[in-house]
Length: 298
Image 1: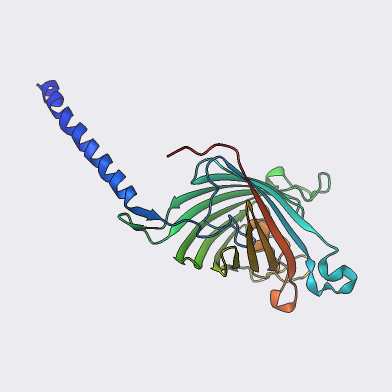
Image 2: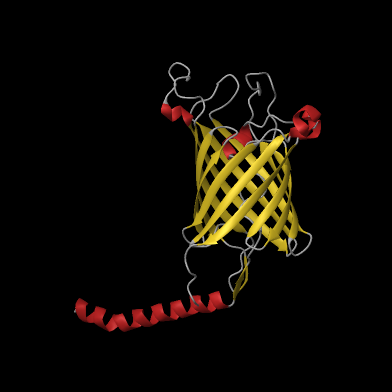
């Protein structure tokens, strides 16, 4: 009897599934998803909500000079160079993976980014885009053999977790907030905490079809009372401004920031420069995109 009942019920279930799929397809057809909230995957030093399209590889060359206030002897910072070389690859349109090397802090880093929610209007309206980021940083410094007593390999590791939340208000204005959690396996407990929280804010104002202004600021929520480096220098919140210039297959960013570091572990929690005291680093980010897989025809 039960088998007969199930057999009679199957056509009804099948028709219900078909109706549901048709309704979802109809909603997608009547939904406009927001694109290009930001032009690149980076705001200034940190990440934007953008991920690479599936099958797309992006090469990132980020460069920071020394501080402008170091004077003519250092050619206003031009004699110094801090570089990060990175590769971002889109596994799918919403999931990308990244690996990079930062010369400033002798750090290897890697990230996973997943676009969880997309801003949209129409049948399925949603007010913002949210991308989740998880990262690991491995510090090669101190050099092997120069470690303090009791120093372990795991002490070189640090982790970052971010929720990148952005809204494109107009074709010319986009804003983003970045709640951030950073954990370092080993720190000087008298000057720093293993677990640190920060909130970032940033935005983009489009001036012309190919030129935009960007900005980014990270505020540390729980700095320790003795918020100093070993040399006695103070830690500051990271601040940066950029000019984005889009030229065909790549984006060129001119940057002014108070940090020479290019990984979240360091530029959020270990920035040594006072932007308003003249500790400003001129720099640039250059990206080049390569399509490794053909896009599916629709």
